[in-house]
Length: 586
Image: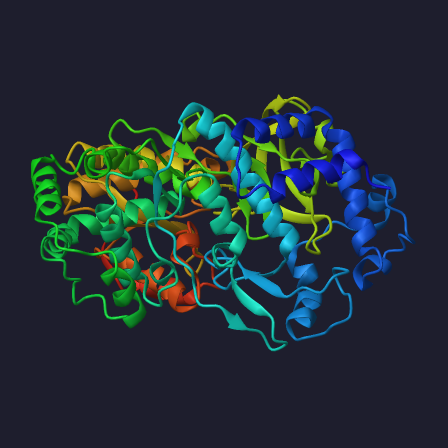
């Protein structure tokens, strides 16, 4: 029988939406993490009791056992590809308990930016409850350091279109499924940070029109805005890059009380008309503040003077946007949001004072059952045996394996994390990179982090010319012999040929992986190629994924465009304006 302690804590955490006591949430988190090992065993027991009769679990011969040893001995570690046949049957309407005891009624879609097409993942109320628990836990710690009271949040969030699967299940991006859930609004109200924008803007069919209206709503409520946020840092940067282009039009809308003709969606226009009234004084204030700014530095606190912090996921593929985000933020702190994926949540940021580059995530031991595969290989070449949540070692790196309440059992998330410390009995994780290799031709192994560091090193050459890399990606070109790395850059302005040649050489030399350097020296890997693309190219990539049903909130620029991502590769290749080959190893 599941411990009363577990049920009591979950009930208290999930149901407190009308009244929110941050200190009480923190105390509940402390209770959970003090005996993380016991909570993990109880969580797994609960998952297996609820779902032990499913087709998937029965085939592995658990025979009603709910202990962790039997579970690990019987059930194999899997990837999404292994579960696709089961998930497809669910989406096609098979009502048999395939992965979960209770029927799955909603499907989440990943962004699809990595593989070129979205993954389908089961979504249920248990996942929604864990989402709200994560949100409230991190907010409680955040609010202790940076309190907000009776304010609003300027949230650049966008719901994608939901559709029905063949079997009649509602399908949408993970963020859309969260935003459409009644619990989300209740929680935001309880945390005293409701969104500035009405639902008609959040769920509008055209994200450019939604973005414009988000900005306008923020300006209308400028004195009430205490938090500026989005799911990912990229969306915040994108929003204020856009503001630079449309700010005078926004000021005119506020001065005259008339919405721009660029907003054509009837429901959006109707919702905005209720908020927008002529306000010449506000228009003058915004005009004067924007006119006095130097290169838009400190734009966010100038527009929204009561903002306490900027909030969003800022790790991994979001780190390259931090420099520009800090430029807009001025002296405002950047707080990194929690750690999760389309498959579910892992941990909360309970140390909000840490900068994004050092942020860690404390694993909540009751939202899933977690295992960790050590990254080092055994002497026999076999993959190491996974260890439990409380068995990880400080300073070591692991790949996360997740078992959750929505039908994923011993599921490889594909993320590599490092153990940076412990909060009571639960580990604090630092995200390192995706496990799958990003760039590899011969014996070279370069990850997304390696690519990011190389781009940062080369971009320093540009900064002397007051230029910046707007966005970037990469590709392994094996059509020629030998194969070589291709790096695509979109720049903020024109750079000389000499500068770009230097950048190209710097990129090549910045990949310090021994396999890469050795292969380059013997020409087993060809000279790195830097391709400069037209302004707006990466926006076209965003448009491409939005057209496929992705939400802007969930968009991540693919840092490596693989052979299956032909559409994105075509967008990039057709917009190349200059190309340079490295001479670093000549």
